[in-house]
Length: 611
Image (cartoon, rainbow, N blue to C red):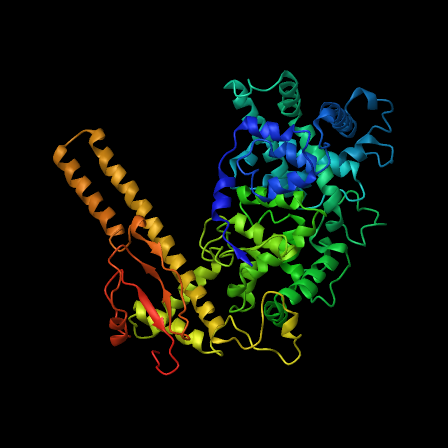
């Protein structure tokens, strides 16, 4: 079952006034089910109470707000005393009791300098990771935030000496700190603008306590500790317990939870994380998409290679910050907790299956290690929820067309895209140039759709494969004509999506150039030179938009299949020109390039071959 959630998404995306958010938070009828729906619907996006909701979901605070003040005071006092206790300095007066014992050169266990050197080594390791935290975000580059993150991670590692600090924990802490700081700043802004005047004194006092900037570090530690209680099993290896130096050494490359590049049959030191990855790959992926599972297994791409980072960082490097926060909304709200992570893992693979199935080993690894950006995170989350509970959450419409494979998360060209361009450039230099028209492209796609052996998206059954009936969402049985047409429509839609991206860039650039041309008069100087410069800029802007179609005249053409067999599939776009009056005129010239902005049809008639 598929549904169109466009109207619902737009409604939930509208900003909610701060007073309404507070009233929702303080509602005595608030329960776990309402919080879950609030998060799944995307209501926390652009919200100013996300940090409070997360604290409730992480059980740092109860749902009822009557006990919040007491719990916050107790939690903040605990962190303050713990930080003071663990931050030792041998130069302080309390350690100047014996010059032979309090000596940097002394090797006695009671020597405070020994503990000081171990702590300094741990802090140095933490600081190196903190400096690399989200380098694209200025927020994490300030010395204040780095110092705060370093202190939180140090106190946590000293309190949990069995686990200590492991690489990746800093990227778990970063979103928590970001959300807390954003909510504190938002509340201060509303307070300055008298935006909380409609609240009661009790509500204002409670919000003052929750959003006290003096305790930003204390509250971040409480949230981080609760979240790590759920995630620590993914950072622990079975060989950690009983190790003499496990409490002081951070996670090294040889203790990452198994040998990353080995086969799944010999994964190295066992851990719960390795078992979980094997279960996701060998059970869930094999059942949901057996073709993709076989393809990755044939290339010997084990889930440990890419999945360890996905799970330990809670997908922190696979999504930009604004999308990652929405993803964490759903993960934290779902019950049982962290179960949704398995289906997010599967959804990430399934939604780029068209890229993986036609790729070799190195290309697949590039897509998995540099995951393509998601176009619509709401659709992605709804698809993940559908995989988990198909009856409760309907499958979103157009869920497959949700990624930009030509760029990375940082907005740079994807390595696979650059390599494909280099290969095309090399082929153009070594072979005669070929003129490609719109008809040639569509004819090629049509041949692939009609040929069961040519399309990379339809894989044949291996002799030792599992029965296709076990697949929930995909099948490896020979596809009928209707399925092949749907496949062809998907490929054409992908091409159209890429063309639309280039058109959008051209239109934006043109508007900016025209705006610059209008501002030239403000500079003063020679009027003749200014007019000449404005004319040149306008010509460049017109050239950018010459081959694009105005947005107000572009509309999607619904795909229809006539009742008398496989008659025609309407593809591409129809511009704002008059509609075609006679479709037979297209049949008289099936391989000629027709005039611009004309609706194209590809006919599938068993008695007549167009390709």
